[in-house]
Each structure stands twice: as C-alpha cells, then as structure tokens.
Amino acid sequence: MHLQLLHQSLLLFENRDRLSHYLNDLLEKLGISAEMIGGSALSAYNYRRNTEDIDIITSVDDANKLGDYLLKNNEFDFVGRSSFLHKPSDVKINLCPTGVVITNKSSDKFPEVVNKTPGLHVASLQRLLIMKLRANRFKDRGDVAELIKRNKITWDFIEREVLPELDEIDRKRCKLLYYKALKEE
Image (cartoon, rainbow, N blue to C red; front, side):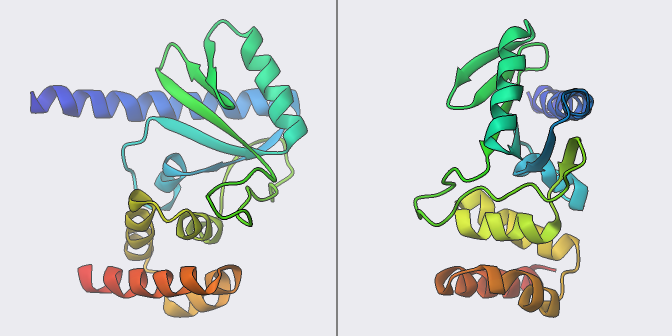
C-alpha cells in the first residue's frame, strides 16, 4: 500500500513538471506572460509538496485567451471556475486572473504579473510568502514555515520585503510563523 502511494506521488510530480513545461511553451506561443503560484511554485524554493494543481496568475484578457485555447484542445476539460483538467496527466490548471479576490478579505486580489516576457514564470519568494500569509489556510501556514526554514530566510528579509505588504493581523501571524520555523530547525 505504501509503495503504491509513493508511486502515485512520484507520478503526480512528474506529470505536474511535464505539464508546467508544456504550459510554458504554450504561453510563449500565445504571447502570454503568467506567474506560477501556490504549491506547484514551492519546488523552485527548495520545498516540494504534493499538490494536484498548477495555479497561474495572468491578466484577465490573457486568462480568457488561454481559457479559449484550452477549451478547443481535446486534452483539456473545463471543470468550472477558471479551472481546466489536463486529461493525460490528471493535473488541474487554475487560472487566477489579476484583480480577482483571493480570500474572504475583499482587499486581497491576485496581483499583476511582474515578468512581462511570454511564458510561465515562478512567483518570487517574497510574493509567495505574502500570498500565503494573506490566504491563511492551514497548508499555507505550513508552507510559510517550510519556506523560511529551507531558504534560511532572515528576519531582515521579512522586515524589508514581506511585512510592509501585510496588514497588522498578517504581520503578527508572520512573526509567529517565523519564530516557529526557527525552533523547528
């Protein structure tokens, strides 16, 4: 049973990585710049965890353009709410258009894509930390602690790059997670 679960996890990583490369090539071909966020972006920062989807930020117009392309492609099924299932890999793609609300806080919206070069780019460590702190789901809090540990993030970096982008509650949460991560090292 354990070997079967391990095999499924390894296959999921392989499928997700292959789909990421396919998406990069497709976005370049379509002239769309996009940014990978969420669990699939973590591996760029020394942390691989199981996730069954690829979340990408792009402009509203580009999300529509990409969505239209995916709808016409037999390898993808629309599964609702800006999400498409890549049938061969069984990996879901979530389109996260700039300006759409991320969390229950109406002020938290998907940001603009920073790198305007067509293709799929990974969000910066700073942006990932900020989005995960704002989302405040259980898995996001764990991701923040792991990113801090695995990347040896200093408090100076947090103060300079992360805290100014957070509200007071998220700043307190960040501080708690930072010191928790240090204890776990």
